[in-house]
Amino acid sequence: MARTKASSIKMGPFSEEARSPEVTQENIAQRAYSLYEARGRQEGHDLDDWLQAERELLEEESGLSIHKRGARKS
Image 1 (cartoon, rainbow, N blue to C red):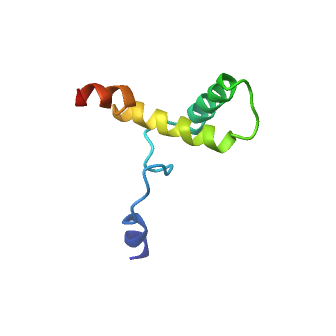
Image 2 (cartoon, rainbow, N blue to C red):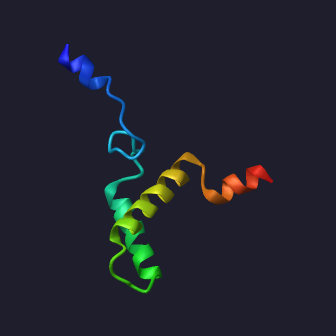
């Protein structure tokens, strides 16, 4: 019974279980590092870079990138 309850818990969109196989922690880390380098290696934005990288990769994976959303509305 406990197993059924645990499996019925819904995970958030950024949880490991909800993530696509293509969006891995390694992919996110690589994208976050690219963002860090693009900013001139400015320290202190590691969490922001990680979250932005995760968001971008998930948007690309789902086909909802900012550019595509803008093109659809036009």
